[in-house]
Every structure is written in C-alpha cells, then in structure tokens.
Image (cartoon, rainbow over all chains, first blue to last red; front, side):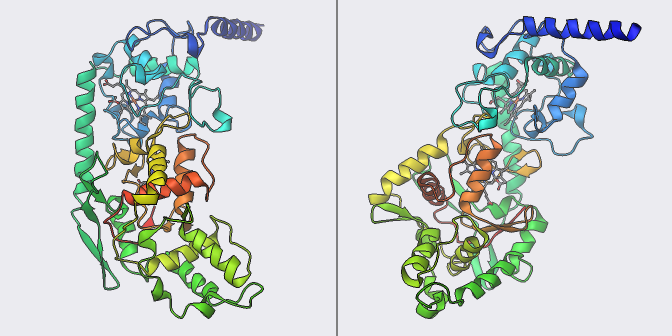
Length: 149
Length: 278
C-alpha cells in the first residue's frame, strides 16, 4: 500500500516535469545567461557529478580539471579548471554556458549541451538530439553550484 | 566576466603547451637517418609559428618504440608488404618487383603526395591501385585496408628523413582551398573543427590524450590502441566520429583535399613513416 503510494507520486512528479520542460528552441537567454530552470524540477547534484564524469554524457572532465574529482584520472586542460566556479558565476550564467556556451564565449570549443539543430553533418543517431536532457542540464548546474569555497 | 575567463583559459593553454615543450628534442635519428621534428611554419599558416611532429606529444615509452626499427611493431606489417611486393597477381602475371628493380627508386615520392594528376588529386593509394589495375591486371585494393596500408607504408618508408613538400599553388590551389575549408568548418553534434583541437589546443590534455598538431608526416602510423597500421583517412574518420560527425569516406574527394591541406601544414617536417602512436 505504502509502496504503491510512492510509485504514484513518482509518476505524477515525472509527468509534471515533462509538462514544464522548455524545448531547446524556446530557451530564453539574457546575454549568455538563462534565468529559469529548464524543467521546474530541482537539479540533483549527485546525478550531476556522474554526468560530469560520464564520457557519453557531459564528459566535462575531458576539458576541465576539477579538484572535487581528484580521485579520477585524466583531467583535461582545454578549458579552465572548474574549482570554485560557484563563486565566480551565478546559477543563470552557469545554466546559459551549459545550454549553449557560444552565447557567452564566442567561437568557443565547448559544445552546446542543450541544442538539437543547426549542426553540420551530425552522425545519424544524434540527429535532432541534444547531448544532455533538460533535467541532466539542471543536475549538472546543481552540481557546479556545489563547487564553491 | 568574459575577459577573466578568457585569461584563465589562456593561462591553462600556456601551461599545457609548456608541458609539451618540455620535450625539447629538435631531431631524432632512426637507423642512421636524421628526422627533423620541428620546422618553421609555412607562410600560409597564419596562426602558428612552428610545426611539430606528433612524436613530440607522445609518452617516452611510445616515443622509444619508434626509435628502433626492431622495436617498432609496424615493421611486422612492412615485412608482409615486402612479400606482397614480389607476389605475382592478376592477368599479366606480374608482381610489383617485375617492373620495379628496387624500392629505393621511390625515395621522395611520399613528400609530394597528394598531387594533382589529370585534373584530380592523386594519393599513394591511388598510385598503388592504378599500378595493380593497369599494369598487373589485378583487382584494386580496398582504400583503407590492411593490404593497402602496409604497401603505402612500405613505399612511404623509402622517403624517411626527407622533408614533406606538397604543392599548394598552381593547379593544386583549388584542392588546397577545399581542404582548408574542411579543416576550419565545425561539424558534428559537438560542433568542432579540426583547428579547435589541433591548432588552438595542441599541447593540452583532452582527457587521457595530449593533443598534437594532427600532422600526417608519420602515416601510416602503428597505433598501440588497435595494434595495426592506421591510414590518414582512417584517422580523419576517427576524429570526425569522435565529434559525432558523419565522416567522409576513405578515398573520397573531400578526404583527399583535406589530406593535401593537412600535409601542407607539415611541409618541412621529415617523413617519419611508420610512426608509433598510442
């Protein structure tokens, strides 16, 4: 009985998230920043940490060193280290950089993680897809916000 | 905010470059042949002063494997290519050796390839297949195959130590322009160009790999990762897939143009074929 209640709650939660989700084309930028959540569901920093590491998801460590992940090998040097990033950037700035970094850094090498069109010769299986889902972006934002002094 | 981050990124870049430059070799010697590992960048490279061999960016262990032909695993495949060289194939009853007295006659050939012949770009692979079809009456080899790559390596080896010197002007100019365009065009879901990694970030670590300038003077290269000889077009294909882009086909006009352009970015570096990489 109790178990079913939890199940129902989860289902309701998930569908609410989908209803509120902002599509990649509808994201509103102010400068490079994106003020509101993409999903209305608070990000989960523990999940964000995993996505940050995962080579098939964020793979952020490929380019950014991060002292919080000192136990992991191979931190990249292509982008700036993300230690203390929460002290330098606001939540909206971080979200904007993740959704489409080119709105903040012109000509950057950093991929846009929540964009699904306008690519040249994407591999068939990634056509029309974003690298991260809206909730995964929120999870990574939540994780980066834990990287303060 | 933008300025601060750019400065941070720039200092990270310098640190990275410093790490690579800690390898201060200018030349190496293999089997009595001296190889130039750094050369002044050709004038048409606007964003770089020096061109550098991929050897400089690899670990000491990987570098060591290339310094002695007995340790270089590529030579297993070159031995196989020697067998192919004298094997009779095709309707004319000939082998390569029937017409070519000596492999050393090919010294210098690799340094000028790809080149324009009859209005199109000709690569080493094209030459090998033309010989097979027209002179031997044999089947062409698949462009990016083990048999092709080892023969390309065997003929490339005859130029070891000679400076790369592909033509970029005259009738090569339009192909070179096409290759240059491809080099700087962002592709794939990750939306990157060759230049983002191999011009803007050489010397920097990208996850477990130190980015090199993406030079092709050592191709075909033996890679520890897949324990075989890897062709130029095979490598281009791999880099495109990594950025989630649909690659062009090995042997395509696009990849030949890109090969000419990338080769020209290494003009002045010695032919190193067969290099060893991770």
